[in-house]
Image (tube, rainbow, N blue to C red):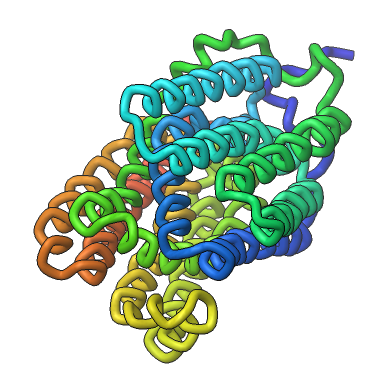
Length: 434
């Protein structure tokens, strides 16, 4: 019997689980993890201070650009690599090298631009935690590709809940912020080596049958635009925070960041909508099935929009008491800014699945343009609004950036679907598969 070709390889993989089951696990994991990140800020605000929350926010913003570029969206690329262009060893080797380079860059930056010792050490430990997280993220691509989002959900839930418990325990026992972040980083590292890596190992095919031997350099060239996309996305979302820290100070940043993090639970729903469908979208795109691709992609985008609209209504009606309950009265005083943060989040809930659909369609090179436009809008709005309007201005700048990026992404998705459908029609006209 003839040996299967690469094109037939997807048929040899374990069948994907039902989208509904995978959606449930992805949603559960993301919701628990999002809630744990929200709880982490509550712990810092209640057991620490606004300044501690500000230091945490600074550390996240400082470590984000190099770490998100190092991510290179390799999880999404691996999960949607239905033609098996690259082997697992290429993905893993590239992820390790990129993460190590990003961590070294953060350490060098802390040396070159010294800050307060507690802030510097907290930033260093958070950078290590993020390094472990980005390595775990690649193994999540294995879970996603093989339709085992139950593994993904369990990992996220354990990492988030136990991590918050560890931080709370350290602070309750009188430990400092750096020690709390060090303990959290240790737990995330243990999750990587104790659960994520060995679980992915059991799911993957034996070495030599997990894909072609495309070189790591070729993979890096393909992934570089996606790393740039993640970098630009991080800059786009963090620009208002950079302006708040520079113009208003770390304390105001400590007030602003928890509002943004309250949107993370909603982001969990959006991820859960898109992640299980990504391999299916990729297969439709590879087969040039424009109709089914468009139906599934737009259904996910519409659900993201509905979720975002519900979040805006919640922020308008209950924003002030929610902020007071979670963080305290000083945060509730900024409830007007929270409404615009929610509007920005609603736009983000549309943008994320749209970008996911573009990735599945391998429309990679155009994605940096989306975020470049969003950065220009967010940066310009931040410069104009933050000095005069404070946190409300920062939230409005976020809306400007998200609105620009979402509009561009939807336009490009429509173009990609039109091109896909046109190619399929041309194939039929020329006697292609019927």
